[in-house]
Amino acid sequence: PAEPPAVAMGAEDSQEADLASLPAHAPRTTIGRMLVGCALGGALQVTGITAVMAFAPRLAKSAGFSPLLGNLLLMLWNALTTMGAVPLARRFECRALFVWSALAASMACFATGVPTLLSVHATGSGESAAHAFIIIGVMAIIAGYEFGMGPTFYSLAQSVFPPGEARPVGTA
Image (tube, rainbow, N blue to C red; front, side):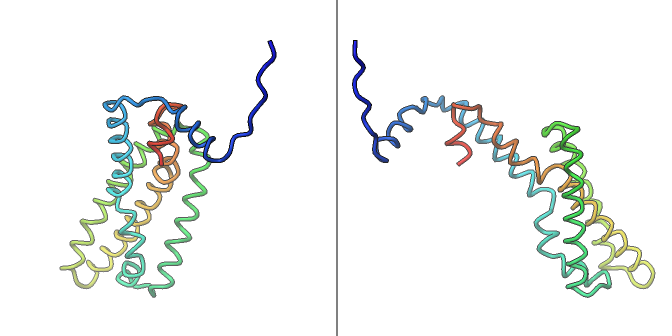
């Protein structure tokens, strides 16, 4: 039997075919996976990286640097720690990197908050010691974030949804 001639599909026809080929999604599993994806994104915010980057000039000024120089130094540290993530990603799984770096960055965020609170009331040598701990803490937050959470979030967000099921919808 002769096969029917191939019909050229227009853009609208191919979009309808793509949508028709998507399987029906079980709401319970899709919602659970979306919640996991939201939890991954929420973990990024818990580390405090956004506040560190937003307030970098102010932190630098309180530590005795000029705001622009301090900001430049923090951004250079950010770039260096990002490069340090490459060998770690080759050696460890994304999930392990995400979990351990989330723990490290969150602990560093908490450990930075204590000297910051103490520096409000400190004077003299106590103030400079608190500033040193703040700088070390901020560097630890950035390192913890860039060694795992920052680079692995996008891979993990994709892996939450299995291929062919809800990945196009869930990661949109």
